[in-house]
Length: 106
Image (cartoon, rainbow, N blue to C red):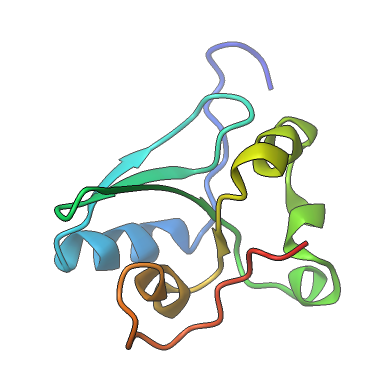
């Protein structure tokens, strides 16, 4: 990606951001190399970076970390940020009774 060039966002990111904001989670979109897509903050004091990947046949065949950029892989190796594909998965990060299988394993 060239300097100043906008990074392509996953198609489901808007839906996930809207759902998180609707329940009171603050959300910032990140664009720096090696960082996940979102930085979130819950009023209880929880800061959580989240990577969003769109649901696809390729994603179902591979470990989610296989879809990360090399720079994101380096960051993930240290921080283990969660990778989500759905609103339910994103909400489950903050609420125990929210449905969703959050894929953080490699």
